[in-house]
Amino acid sequence: MAADAGVRRVVLSSTIGTMYMNPHRDPDAPLDESCWSDLDYCKQTKNWYCYAKTIAERGAWEAARALGLDLAVVIPVVTLGELLQPSMNTSTRHILKYLTGEAKAYVNESHAYVHVKDAAEAHVRVLEAPNAGGRRYVCAERTLHRGELCRILAGLFPEYPIPTRCKDEVNPPKKGYKYTNQPLKDLGMKFTPVQEYLYEAVKSLQEKGFIQKASGNKGLASRGSSPPQNSTAPVFMSKL
Image (tube, rainbow, N blue to C red):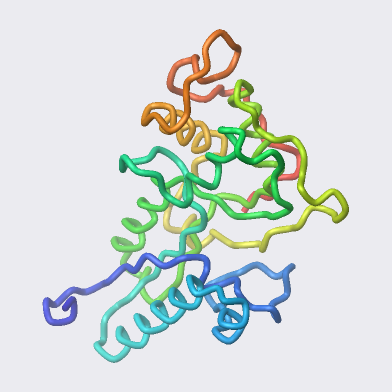
């Protein structure tokens, strides 16, 4: 146990699912370290992932207080970028279906995203900063509607059958929860722009054989290893 070993600080990897599952929360108010998912609501909606993660993080805070441990928690959102493992993960499957043609339209939803390397760096900064303990840190670069995500992918890799239509053709685009990543910026974090980690994610999918590299086109898949410097963000992206 960390307390028995004399560890001064423990950094826990949690998830944004411990914060946003609350039907009574003001959707226009940014999620911060004071926000917790409502366990009864998680049970009512059968969101057992958020239920379990919320119980786990609350338990960690209780144990840290009881043992006198200096605990800090990093709360990543959907993480994207280069795959380290040979198998597919949930976050990258989030975009794979748009590249393969499996999804003919995108859903009317918004999510927050971050580069996987930034999520790793956040843990190191929270561990090493003298006064970083006792807090929860949202690790997010920006929020995107799924349509905005698809438009960025299509701009970077036009050779793939990325959908241009939303499944919900009646309702306005759903807004994602607002987040604040300022506490991590105060520790020196500089978040990677979304175009870069989406580009890295697709290149990694190509290199690991999850999607085929297209040939004889003008897509970026055949243009070296870096995204273009002049790629622009969609109009409706919400910068955190």
